[in-house]
Length: 411
Image 1 (cartoon, helix red, strand yellow):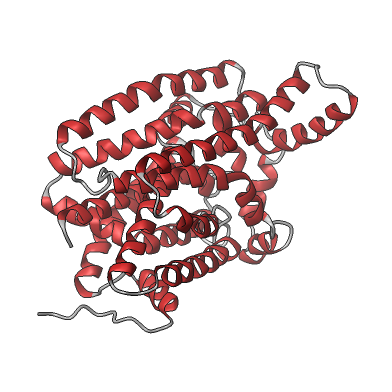
Image 2 (cartoon, rainbow, N blue to C red; image 1 turned 180 degrees about the horizontal axis):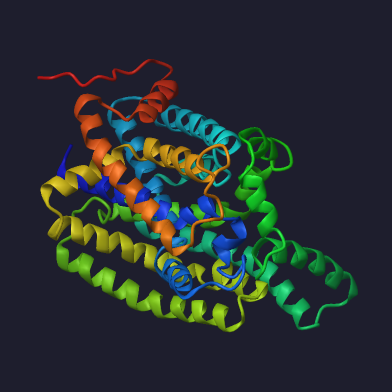
């Protein structure tokens, strides 16, 4: 593996660790708390600070980084298939088929927050963009971003007009029903909060049964709502891969300039949105607008800033030992992502340690640190003995319809 691909693997390792920082609340608390720190009642100072930090620096950005790297990795797999004389289309679409099936199994049997099935659907489209230039990829990304903002913005606008009393009768009735759903999902003192705590402290059968029953179509809903944003991020990842930014080939000064510019452009508006949500008492309209509409372009900018900052630190500050451990974690991102879901649901759900809803928001990050340490500790020794992570090996074998060599052959 060349240094530049070690850099790509290392930043993927940071991304799979970082995505836990934004998901930890959804593992440990009702989904309403993910959006709204006041969903279960007035938050304490430490919990409010943890929410604000996460809103400004992690929420959506770590998923964005993961999505960008999925786009870059997809392009890399296509290029490697072509270089090896295999059908790029057959290789790619077989991978997406099995990724989608893994994602659905993840959703129905482990955790409702799956993104793999969404990524698989996006992957069906990504192949069509593989030959575009950097400029064309960025233009397409901008188009998908505008659609994403228009979709969420239209929902926010109808609720805002309803709240202001400026909707006519029929439209108001529809918006009122929608508003009630979002009040239950993300409003302050959410009426669904206690119900969700009781549900996730129940048995495995009850929890999985809800996903297999009433929630069975949730993966389709996720695609309809979030395909546009995810496609934009993946296309940016493909563009940055082609521009050699994600392969570690830029000089440190260029990474530094991009990181500084991105954080200066995005952090102040995001901090202002967090303040506005708090000033509005974490009302549903304010929270929805801040989290799902107005933060979106700034989330994108900060995601690129995180990519630049991580690459800068990998090049200039990380020791060879740390780079190797991050790269190993990134090479096993698929296994580490799914293992995280299995570990965290076992810790927090009723069929495990039953800590759901009982750990303060700020304290949840201790679980992140422990899981990050586990990823860094186990990934490198595993790859010293085996060619792939266990689920990477299974995915590769299924995609090629042939059992792949697993144990590393010593020279």
